[in-house]
Length: 271
Image (cartoon, rainbow, N blue to C red; front, side, top):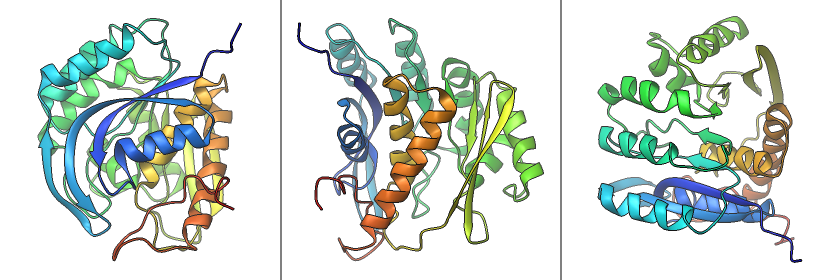
């Protein structure tokens, strides 16, 4: 009997420049030996310089995409990225309730682009927390997003404040929280995972590169891929961190576009 694919579904926006969104997710799944499936929530006009325009898709279009896939293919894990609106949050929450098999769901809390373009209105944040957080296995905010999600005046900076913020997010009903520390000061990137009532810290030296477009998308997708393959939460995060660091190092050696270039998702194949 032929071996079945390990599948990961991404529900996110499209990035035609290939660095973030659906395109980055599928590249990541493939690089980690998973079969990528996709439901597109929005089309964007963007490049390495930033996001120029966003074209949300109709709820009926998103629903049809999801149900076509779910009715035919077993889904081993789900990654959720850019949603963009209250209506999209509601429809994705409804669709998640239809999933069979209770696969792990990783929610990348995409509130804005790396270039500063808002991708979800702040007034919609409470709805995201109420509707989606209780349905997912892990949320992965960066430090600025953590501040917005917890109503903090400034992003947390000390280990104690980061752990406190993670606890606040856990109280919203999500199963676990990964607060990403890439926006913090210092030479190290320190990420804090709160899982199974324990804190796990992942520390690595910051990789100085101008090619970081899609880092958040890639990390959450890598976690979903490793969890689809049966890794525990803490091991999935650790392996995803190792992958993204390698992709950042490899990406720093080439140039694409005039702005913030992408990671090198397929560095193992292009050597």
